[in-house]
Length: 100
Length: 181
Image (cartoon, rainbow over all chains, first blue to last red; front, top):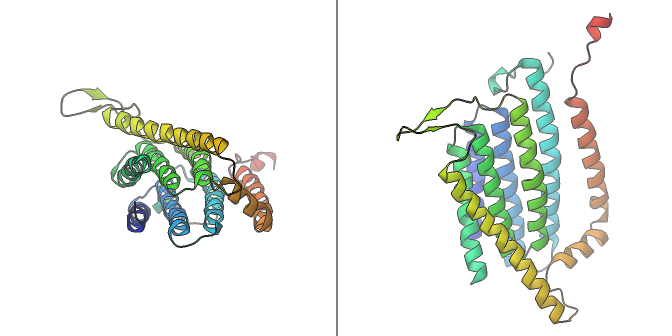
């Protein structure tokens, strides 16, 4: 339970999210990777608040990261559902036009 | 001792959930593994004395975003439902649970129980010892959020309202204007 263990867990989360974004061909699968990366950053904020900083501003930053993630998930999934209505597919390679 | 136990379970859930999100082929399975990973991150927040962030993580992520992702997966066709036959000759459908999902569910249930036990014990200890110092960070976060960061707090409500209206407009089914013309 030291600083380095939390940073290692955050690193693993970030790497897994990056691999998911890079490896998946499914748009919703890529959004899962975005959520993992946002979690890694919020975990880093809380960890450095505990070990380096005495005030509580890192917790506020984590709260706003969670809030922005919620807004991003809502809008992103709405775009995915609309894209599925237009193109009948959620494969990333079929997203080639901005306007149908 | 308790925090160390909670830390090891949470770290295991987080790391294996994240790796399983990578290696699982079924989309719904990887979404459920993301759920385990997020519960593990909530446990890690609890070991870092951030109770309010842990509760927010459980409510917003686990209760909101993962359910939204599952709805989107199912609305867009999801994973194709084939009956798989494993190496022992037993049939299993991909959307039903197996032994691995039950083990992870038991672990996340342990973490949730630990969260509740920790909150219960801290509230009991706080009620017994009356002092002005912040025993948990919940009051500190609340005071800070409504004094120093009040502008960002109010702007976040506008952001959420805009995101909600935008999502409703984008995902609306297409009105057939060609028929009227």
